[in-house]
Image (tube, rainbow, N blue to C red; front, side):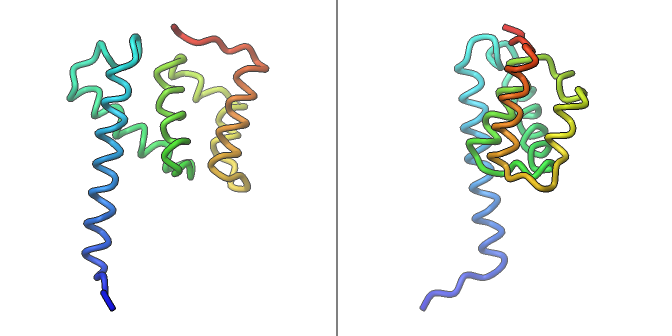
Amino acid sequence: MITITRDQMLLFSKQARKRFEDRMVAHMQSKPGYGDSLPEPQLRERVVALIASAESYQIDDEDNVQYYIELFFDRSPEIFQDPEISAILKADNMSSSTKIAFLNDTLISNGIPDEQ
């Protein structure tokens, strides 16, 4: 039987997060009008901050975090100040996927346009 130590698990977790950050930076660089106009270090800094922000709202599934990041670039960052959006993000009784679904529905029903 193989035993994985706590330190090894932490290392695996850090490596997985770094790979996700790398994928998100590359993804945003590939989308015209998103992160392609920012220098890579600034884009990475913003992506890392958005991942942390998503986690603070218990949005932790990679697909949902990607949507959260895209939402920031896709629309004005001020939408996160909207009371309805803020309430969804802060809800403790919703899963990550439910929050994203409600965010999407709310943005569509409120007609909050893309910045693009």
